[in-house]
Image (cartoon, rainbow, N blue to C red; front, side, top):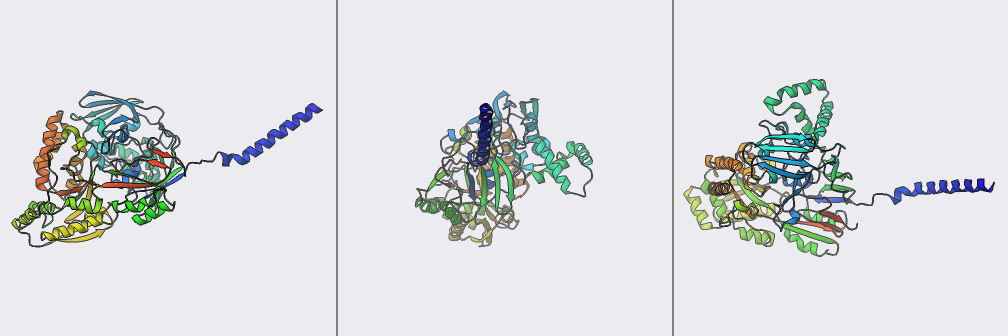
Length: 560
């Protein structure tokens, strides 16, 4: 009897323990990681990583997707970032100047649960998606249109072959548009997009037609339909997994806990639209936001008042703020007037007034990171108002108004610099009308004379800078048509892409810069000093590109 009672008593204790444990488990094991809110000046315009590659886009997509190879910015001095390390690829080997073979990391998962394999890599760089003549994502062709083929050797091995020698293919696979996407996510997206179109016929018919047209059109209909859906519903392999996009308000992500690089230190990340700088700062101070972006230098003293609560991180960007000249404008079609406008800009004065001498003007459309392609002897844009007046007189300029468009809150100091330049041009006799607009589409209306832009040096090489932005395949020449480059400039650009001799490439590039500066389709102002601020307890470092890297090696959260 005693034995039976002891047994029953034991069961009762176990039952009570189970009830207690069940009651407290949610609290004890609740996810204690913080929900981060990042206040931004603009939300990403799209989340398909090859389609949208502007500053506000890559800020987000960089942590949604992964590249095969990664640029290790942390291993370089400020302004560096040319060192390459394994990422989705564990190793790579050069077979010859046109062929590169990469071994993929095993066990990498996409946000939809699929394992990343060579099939996804081949699909990412397929002619139908972004490298063909009439491809789905035309932006990708500017970066990888020189690919002859990408092949799957086996499940975890891929071979890249270029049409001509490419000495920096490894660098290309570590940057813009090279983020790997899930093939199945595109197929699923096409199905979801099609279901929304009730007037469309059966799925098999659409797929069959798409396959028949692939060789001629290069962009199957199903992929075009998929793009419309997936650009707002991305599926990557990075630490951010998409949850929700409320237009004009926020974009929300949760931690992808199966991330191959380790469990993220946050529970969720929300990019919150807060256009006003003062509101972003106030929200950081009162604890509403965890990180804020695009803080002008004149606000650093404000942040300094709260240094016990806030950490500030700043870096000079591999990005130049520039002015684009519409060479088809009735006044600006004469290059002497474009040259005069550049000569009338006092850049040191701008840098002192707006950037507290923390920005700088590069010596041409180049960076030291270009290595053997860089010419240290090239001079930066000159300030010579007397020569500007002489050029204006020689060109027959008679005070005609030139329309200049800028946005209020896209670039730091964008409106302020426009107002100062307006006064500088006035001193040499130029009449400029300033118009503040809300989008790039409005900026680039055909009647514009000048508009503000920025040029990111996306590779430590001119083919990732002047070539992408101003070359024969650039949007400026092909889409917007604000400049038709001389044949020599475009020919040199094509030769640089296929040259196997780095010294010859350097000579051709410097000749391109000579032509570019003579033609003056734009003028460089400066490379800005970018500042972020975050609450104490967050340890995060910015890069010289606009990437916000939220992976474990670059983000530590000590406390909330």
